[in-house]
Length: 435
Ligand SMILES: Nc1ncnc2c1ncn2[C@@H]1O[C@H](COP(=O)(O)OP(=O)(O)O)[C@@H](O)[C@H]1O
Ligand SMILES: [Mg+2]
Image 1 (tube, rainbow, N blue to C red):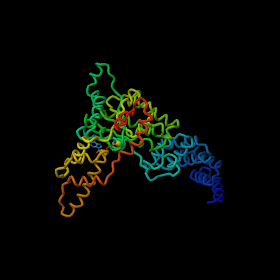
Image 2 (cartoon, helix red, strand yellow):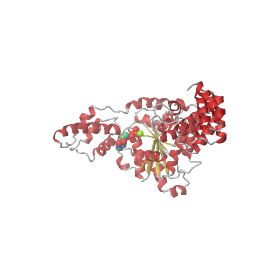
Image 3 (cartoon, rainbow, N blue to C red):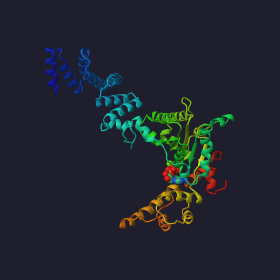
Image 4 (tube, rainbow, N blue to C red):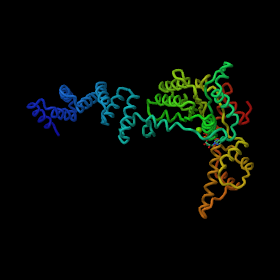
């Protein structure tokens, strides 16, 4: 095609000005040559006599190229409302919205395109609307439900040690759920959540799940980073969706992991949008616009010192509970729990527990795993499962390093130098450091 084509199309139209397909072809050709004013005139002429979608999209594209994004968007919004499945319409609309700074709407539109065809990536939109590293395919509401919602099969009996945490959860959130009238009689307020903190692998997530199992409630578990990092601009909606999911599934334990992701120290949180997100989170937590009855909120973080103090107000995470690495007795009970139902010889639990100081529950799982792998290898020879012995576990311990110590290096500094109102006294006590 060339300028000649345009001339001959114009010539032909002179003879049959009512030939709409011909005029559309001229308009599209003009557009492809970026002769935008002329293209606009021709598209408008076509649209005076027909309702042609191609002409509408063409006109919208012309407007987009001219930088008239609001005119472009008005047209495309209507085309989409009328049920188009043309993916290019969605991507163009998303780009138009992006130009007009309607980020949330742009994300939604681009998601709709990807929902129709997940392979329809648009590099420009991808780079602007998605944060790095997240190429997850979009989820519908049902998928969100099944991804975050579960019915746990573990309860407190499956959790080794953690007696004081269990007691705290019992008093603060289980009893109020079971006996609301008693609390009312004494005028004692219920509500609010518990924030668990401590080194990784020591059972924060696990006890939250077991809490749900304990009261026969559903369990909703989300990592805040999942919510924050998926799509720019849609964090608010994601947050709200999660709380709504909880409200529709009471009684439930809503477990929010990585609470520190909302901390003021994250650089992107310093911006106003981050502040906005924190406020929205707190509002959802307060349940001002919505009823949070029947939702038990548990939060967890490895870095409580990053947390905005507003989180700790009454009715929010007003209990902060340290989850330390298991003590010797707890280590023994975790060992017993994890070896239960596995082929073992008589194990010298006492000596093993003594040897694994500073091991977390996850570390204990790891050494059992190592022992099992070695056993499996020797079982392949004759096909007979060999029982795990004390010696096997001792060998496995040599191959695994406790994972809790690194955390304490940082925690110790905060506990010693930024311990406002004794928040981290538990850490000092654990480390046997006198205040
Ligand atoms: N006290 C415990 N009793 C039984 N299992 C535990 C305990 N602590 C940790 N575990 C095991 O270690 C795994 C990791 O623990 P998790 O709760 O995810 O740690 P955290 O959330 O504190 O990082 C759990 O899935 C669980 O199997
Ligand atoms: Mg966890």
